[in-house]
Length: 491
Image (cartoon, rainbow, N blue to C red):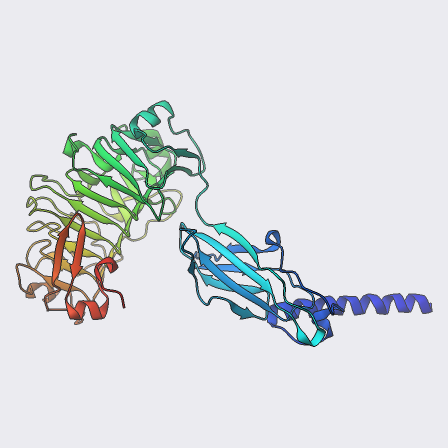
């Protein structure tokens, strides 16, 4: 009985020690025997790389880093670096932060390579020396690569020989850092969600002389690719950077939507991100006069430049299709010349979000958002937006905030067209700068337009430097940090 009692007592003490160790790791370092667990007079070792976990938060905004307790340690030295360019690491948050627990949290960017550095620190109370070396662990949140396409490749020929297979998971084709590519015909993706990705640090270069990325009804992303359309000689009204397939799948439409649309859900974006496009003469996006419904259409961190006075269609055109959420963020849109009066930014010819009734999600409202963007002659004299019902329901939301709008749209009509000449949709406007033909276009702030009271009436002093580059000199615009961040001086 005595031995049994001792065994139970020993077991209970072990359990309590384990609990105290766990609490110490989570809540902070507590200098007592529980933390050391008898570890004294030793040189410590940092946690092993394979024992360090890196997990994105559910909303994708944070990285959560955890590691196991090192018995006898007096805390940890922690750093997180962005290593997109391994030779020039960039610290995320405090560098060499002293942490007395086993977790850390940092801001997360998408498509980024990270390096975690953790070092176990000594504990003088128990004569434990800090680890001689820190542990480094590499992590990235990029989509796994399906294939790397070598520099010098004609993408049209490559995908003719190696067609994109049917896949229920998203595929990723990577272009080499700084690589040079050509494209002289269509690249079809079919119904497979695909990302074409260059390098964030050294973009791939694509000389596009004809053709489109053709989408039959799936997510499609172009990232870190600079596309030169200067020598494009294809049919401008029959091509787009992203062109929906003219071979419309009626069977898919019938099975996925009561409205007869082929629906690409909001979770599978159609996106152009961190790309530079110059010399655009054709559509940026075109639904090819078919009933495609795009859940998410995104243009982010881009410089998109036209060079045409004759293109007489909307740059983004939904002729029979629909979009639920369309976003323009931290980007510049410009035309080298004064464009055609029918070259709208976006046109949605028929229906509204409620017209789309997919089985996989509810399309209850629509949104069109422009934030931290710069518009220059894009388009001058043409409508900024045109629709016969889209983005005009009471549950739709239109946002124009922190933008610089110079010689774009009709004079005094940029906001009016975004709001479709009425106030039906929810409108969020504010902190925008308007300038047209050398003066402030006062009609942008009349009733039913930008009513925020936070607009800027002074000259933004936006100067086009050529080759897609701008400089902004307006003191108020600089102070408020509005427009595409690229053109602002460093703080």
